[in-house]
Amino acid sequence: MGQPLHERFPLLPGSHPTREHGMCAMEMVAWLAGEQHSDEPECVCPTLASIVRTFNDVVPDVETRNRYVRTLVPRLIHTESTSELRERRAYLALDCAVRFFASSALAANGQLEAAETVRQLDEIRDAETAARAAEALEPFGRAVHAARWTARRAASGVPHRLWISGVVHAAKETRTWQGLRRLIESMIELQVRVAR
Image (cartoon, rainbow, N blue to C red; front, top):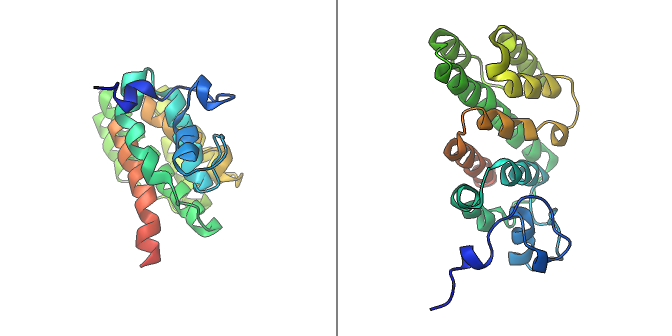
């Protein structure tokens, strides 16, 4: 019996000059979609591509990457989107970074009251609600650094491609890889819900 696909083609961090040198998650998407070798396949929503590229690179080892990132690869094909949908996906991710990942980091740090306060914040839907979330995270120190940085960047109005990677770093605070995978699945499914 041949070697399993995940062993023949493990997901590797970083970008690679050719497929023979290995593939990250987005390069594997390009391969499966029949596109040229690239970590920016045309068939994928740029917001999803940005967060998956960072997820792929931040995960500490091949086994964890194959477990949590690889299952997303085929689902990313044909997720290209409108600017409105890209923005909705970005704010969905930021909301999760603050109200779930940062809250979980605080709870893991024994700051249970702070965790509940953050969990109860208003949903983040735009730059204004991002600014309020950043301000609310201000007293809680390093445990929520990544989520606070991401919310501040979103509030400043810079394009989401310049802050979306912070969502992954917020998940990394407590190694919430399964939660991050579920978030990305929700971001993908948003396209289906919007289309209905």
